[in-house]
Length: 128
Image 1 (cartoon, one colour):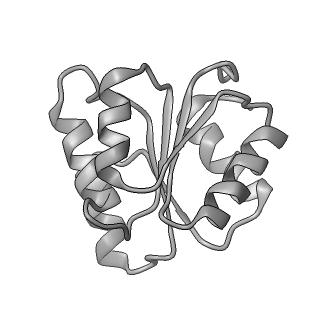
Image 2: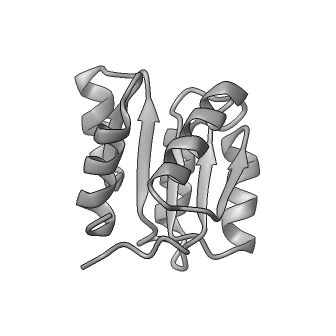
């Protein structure tokens, strides 16, 4: 099955440069409807007010981390199945396991390439 490239995508990171990099890569993959948030709390509000087909979230942010955002998204009946990918420098095995157990669909370690992003998203969304 092919991924719907017209879906709304939300990229969350507290570093503007990282958001710009991910937006550019998503654009190269054909995703044009990309929104951004600088923290988990802002992102959660956006998720509750707009239909997203994919969330790409950093782990380390304040006041709400990407991990806390993941747990909030999974706890909400309307968003519990929303594809959620962690994009983070947190490579600790225990963090990857915790994210998986909390319902994360995939995990991307920074820095990463377009090929890695495409492969991870294909495993979550279908052929890109």
